[in-house]
Length: 96
Image (cartoon, rainbow, N blue to C red; front, side):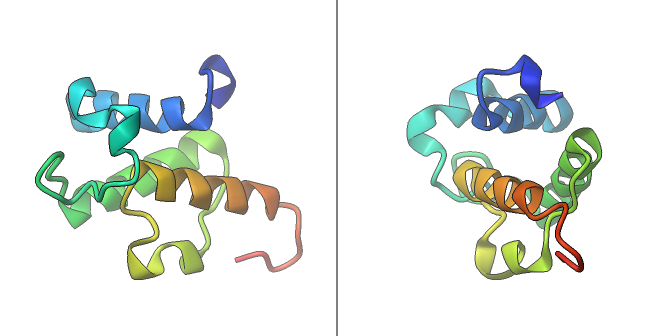
C-alpha cells in the first residue's frame, strides 16, 4: 500500500488525515517531530492505538513493543522509524 505514496512519511500523514480526520495543515514536514498528542494535533492515546492497528494492518507489519515505550510512537517521525525498524526485522525469528 505504501508504494502508492512518495514516502512512508506521506503514507502515515495520509492515514492520519483519512482515518483520524487530522487536517493536513497540522501535519507539515516541519511538525513531523512534534508529539501528535500535543496542542497542534491533539490526538488521544486511543487515537494512537487505532493508528497503530490501522498501520500494522495496512502495511502487514507488527510494531515491536520497544517502539511503543517512551513515546516512540507519538510523532510522525517516531511512527515512521518504528515502522521501518519493524519492517526490516519482519523476517527475523522472534523479532517482537
